[in-house]
Length: 486
Ligand code: AMP
Ligand code: MG
Image (cartoon, rainbow, N blue to C red; front, side, top):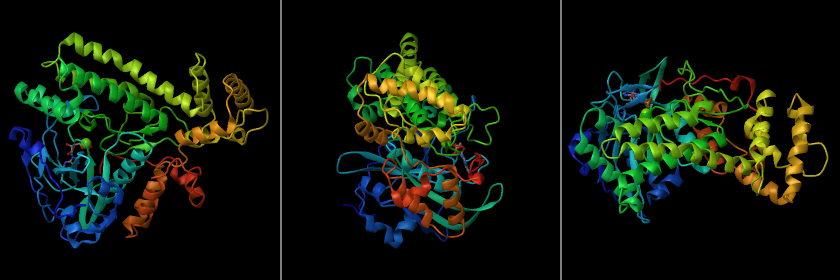
């Protein structure tokens, strides 16, 4: 076990050519304090959980002191924001403190978000607000526990520093953990600024470090691109299956290893509304929930373009053509699992699509409806789920088909229910839940953050003491608008 003073840093990114980043030290808060600590994430670093009580903890993660062995830097990258190329991006308010290797040999990036200005801050103040740190902290941990690749979060450190957004808020810092902070936008930058040597260096670095199994392939760059296409397609399927909307799917927010990355105005579906736009600033719905799979492909196209100096055009096109099948395969499998089907039949796709359409037409809650489906027995009889549908006849008609389908594969109700409960979460991070934790935190009460963090570590388990968190959102919590400004 390591202490804060003996973390095993190996700062491989900082050994890359200096043109890829700028060395920047955090601008610490004058009076940092601990808002929340995640012992589970500490374990990833072999960091003993008692470290949070050490006064140095907030000094390190509030940017006042440098962790021994760290080598903070701001990464340069660019990217397409809402479809438009922006050459002026980079870590504008977050620093890669360094990379820690744990006893299993895994490397974790430590990235301090909100650590002050960098050469890439443009007009920004380099800060993050408490509200947005809480959302990322809870959102990323929730996704991880839903089984979806995601960055993680170690802690939030708060301050009394005023930060001006639409109103004056308090600055905070979030310590994000990720296998990498290299984004699609890193490659776009090197391509569009015509630095092919550096681009190749970075591609080799990514392959060696994150795709070592591909390093010896005869066309390693193509194999790498094929793999990121595969991972991104699967990630989009996972998002759709769990009803997650990212909100800002710019290419600078897409990780090169296919993890959910950069939590801003994200949201989980409450009612099943395919055109759901979680980002108040997304006027045209470019990143609406049902657009995500095609945006994933759009982003891969931007990446393909950036890699065109390393990979033949035909190979890039062929890899991109694999996206749809990969997505549909993962999504189809996931939907069958959500319906509790063990076998695969041609009519399953229609059965699932019709259930989703029923949800949409009846304004039914996405998460609760799938969860309740586990308790629909295969025998004739009324289902409590029926009451959630205005058009009960349509529900009954669908239920008849579903029951026939279950009979056809000899489905066992108990087994099926147990399986469905392991894939259809009971607890998700609904926007209103995060908002309550934020409102309390802004009044100095951090208890709800910890409560939700714990709740969301077991999203598939029945937690009778937490039943209220599985209820429909209250009226005030249904259409909360979350903006980009954070
Ligand atoms: P995001 O919307 O958080 O993905 O940020 C997009 C870009 O703007 C990134 O290059 C960020 O580093 C930068 N950025 C966002 N907020 C700030 C801020 N308050 N100060 C400086 N840069 C920022
Ligand atoms: Mg970003």
